[in-house]
Image (cartoon, rainbow, N blue to C red; front, side, top):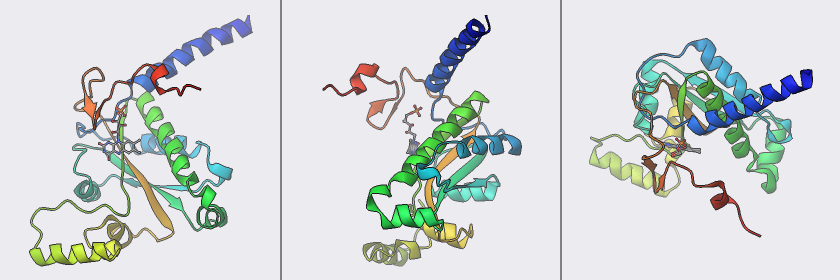
Length: 227
Ligand SMILES: Cc1cc2nc3c(=O)[nH]c(=O)nc-3n(C[C@H](O)[C@H](O)[C@H](O)COP(=O)(O)O)c2cc1C
């Protein structure tokens, strides 16, 4: 009897989880309502329970909620109006296992990217289960502020720095911003960003496109490789 009860609960939970997975959308326009600190912490707690390669637990999370800080990030990624919180995800390269796996051995260098993806997956799904919308966004040390009125001389200097691979010396570069303004030490390498808030405009999965593709997924058989 207990087993059959358990079966019923499990079946309902499967379906609920699948519905949650399918209903979550990347939201890029938020309504300005704030998420509580406890909720953001619980979303990050979800991330910390994601698996990590060799159990290195190398990911670190920076929570940005002040308007000035969020506005600065939006200069690098001019979307997400009305967002409540932005979380930046870093990999701690100073850990002994990080040094060994991500620097020494080439065949393990991709692990922090996989770990970041798994952490993000937990975060966005758990957030959705609490009615909180999100959008993962690509943010790397190479991103440049999208400013309009830059003086010609600065444009030329920036191009020279970029050509010489000195992008981190550019004041409009994200790495420069991280180290100088957010005081993030060099051993923390940025992996990704994720915006959280409450949707003002929720994407329509039946009609919306992003990039080249409709956001609606095709039938599962399309993605399965034939032998
Ligand atoms: C690694 C990664 C990077 C992404 N970067 C961006 C981004 O920079 N800007 C953006 O608007 N969406 C970004 N997205 C969201 C994708 O565009 C979105 O997941 C895709 O269009 C499918 O839509 P859905 O999430 O609503 O299913 C990113 C998603 C991932 C997983």
